[in-house]
Image 1 (cartoon, protein in one colour):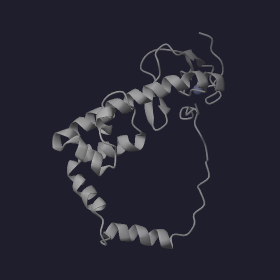
Image 2 (tube, protein in one colour):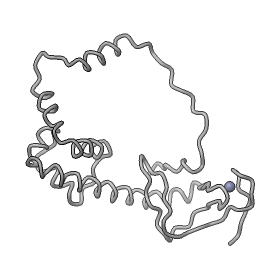
Image 3 (tube, protein in one colour):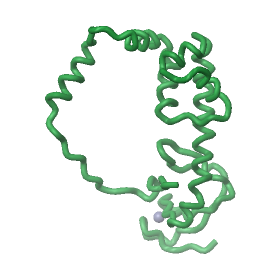
Length: 176
Ligand SMILES: [Zn+2]
C-alpha cells in the first residue's frame, strides 16, 4: 500500500483502505461504507480526507445505506405502534395520508424527522393522548406552551455561533 503524509497528524500513514466494518457520518447518522469502496484513511489518527471526486462517487452509496437504515428503524417502530392501536389511528394523529405508515414498512423511505417522531412515540405510546388533545384544539394553552410563546416574544435576536473547526472525519456530508 502506498502511504503518504497525513495532513492532520503529520505521520506517513495515510493510504487507500477498503474492508468491512467502516462507518461514516452521513446526514444525521453513521452509515456503513461499502466494503469494496476504498477511501483514504490515516492508520495513525483515523482521519479520512476525501477528495471531491471520490465524495461524489461515494454519495449514492451512502444515500442508499442511509435509506436502508431509516426503513429498518421505522419498520420496527411501526410494528410496535401497531400493537397498541390501528395504524390508521396513528396516521390520523400524525396527519399522514391513509396507508402511509403501511407503505413505510415496505419500500418507501421515511424522512429523518418522521423516523425520530415514530421512535419517540413507539417508546412511549401513551403520548398519543397528548396528540389527541393537541388536535382537539380549544382555547386552552398548556403551561409549557405559554412559556414558549412568552420566551419567543421576549427573546433578543441572537447572532449565529461562529463555526470554529471541521474535522476531516466528520466532513463527509455531500450534496448529491
Ligand atoms: Zn493522521
